[in-house]
Amino acid sequence: MSWSIKFKQLKISVHPFFLLFIFLWILVGLPLQTLFLFLLVLGHELTHTFIARLYGLNIYQIELFPFGGVGYMANPLELYPQKELIVAGAGPLFNLVIFIILLNYSKGFYGFSLPLDTSYIDFLLNANFYLFIFNMLPGLPLDGGRVLRALLTPKIGIHRATAVAVSSGKLLGALFFLAGLLLSFHDYMLLSLSLMGLFLYYAAGREQKIAVYTFLRYLLRKEKALRKNRILKSEQLVALENTTILEVLKHFKPAKYHQVIVLNKTCRALGMLTETQILESALKEGMNITLKGIIRK
Image (cartoon, rainbow, N blue to C red; front, side, top):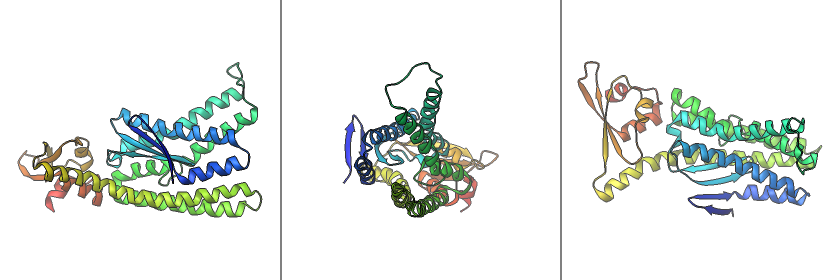
């Protein structure tokens, strides 16, 4: 059972795996280090949230894991690869900045000292370094996996890009699990790597399910509103036949249902596409397919 707290419109929860991780660290006599790790992970996720909200994206819940966390959004971030790239990179950047600041402090660049033992400074340096490196590994649900998906989506489509990132995440999870078992013969504390690997494998599979439900929710939300109210505000766009899906999606607004009139080079109408048709094509064939390609089908 997870522990959670709500702050204004944002719910922050701690996954049971992280609670177990915290318990084990406290059990071996590392309470202050555990607190530091919790605060670093929280700061990592709040940075994601802050950047996302700058883009007008609504994150209503943060779930904290030992290596970071997952932000649950009302908006399908996967449909906006450039935004996903920046939002995903913001968390690891937070840890990198903290690492650089502490590194400069440890070298005496600032001319003042903190009331902390050097062992704690070393722990914070290592924790931020590993949080940065680990989160940038190219597999979902890690931030590096989201960066990978954002880079692949314009080329192979959201569905396939998510599948590649999920497979990579599961592979990383299996490797961490095996590494933890092998290294535990030298230091039993390294069994935490196996725990991390199990969790990463599980979270990667869940990410795959979440991606599917994100699109279903996005599509069905408007259909449900239309059936309930019988009328839904719409917005009509006009685009040339050689316009890509990615270019069209940039003009979609969550509160409206869209229809796109497709014109040929002489500005003659070829037909009309609904938002549902365009999103389904994006999911199946990628963001670079043109409207002409959809109309022909």
